[in-house]
Image 1 (cartoon, rainbow, N blue to C red):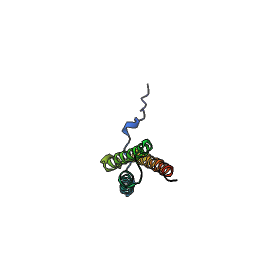
Image 2 (tube, helix red, strand yellow; image 1 turned 90 degrees about the vertical axis):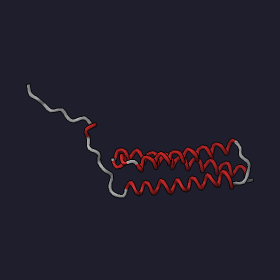
Image 3 (tube, helix red, strand yellow; image 1 turned 45 degrees about the vertical axis):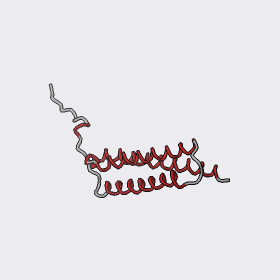
Image 4 (cartoon, helix red, strand yellow; image 1 turned 90 degrees about the horizontal axis):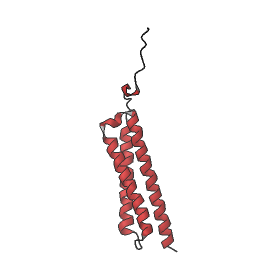
Length: 118
């Protein structure tokens, strides 16, 4: 019988670090978008003209979901495990999802505002 060595399972793979500066850039992008999102929610909730309606809840809820996703992305980006390329890619996907949710929330707000203004 010949002894053949089996390939090591994928769990033994060594983490590949992301290039220098990638994490810092992602953290900066997340915090800039988070700051914009919070400023938008402040305006939409306290300064925008008109009365609250069911349509307002949809746009505000979508924007709040975007903020929650941004906070998850920021939490993930600040972890040491995010040095691994695989984890970094997951964090980027959380960030992209938050950006999409923010754009949808803003589009819903624009539609609602255009309905109120003749």
